[in-house]
Image (cartoon, rainbow, N blue to C red; front, side, top):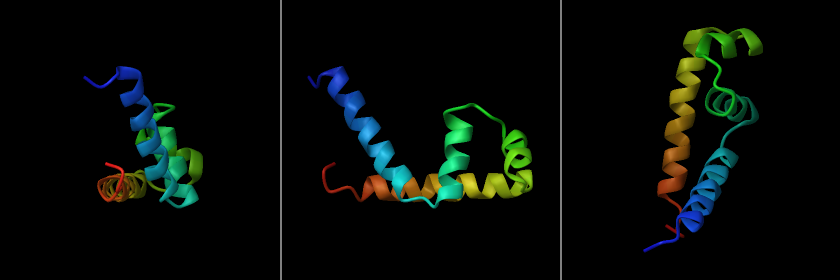
Length: 75
């Protein structure tokens, strides 16, 4: 059985690596949404774009992170 702390550390590394593949604005949007818990509307107001654009960027960013994590040779 894998140690839970080891697995959490591994997951944090994968997330950090996935975030590193994003452009600065996309990384900010992901962090505001998932780390700070802001809504798409709050993010849109904060960075000056529409809520719809935030939604599109979030989807695209998550897909990009998912692809980067799936391609990780250490997995």
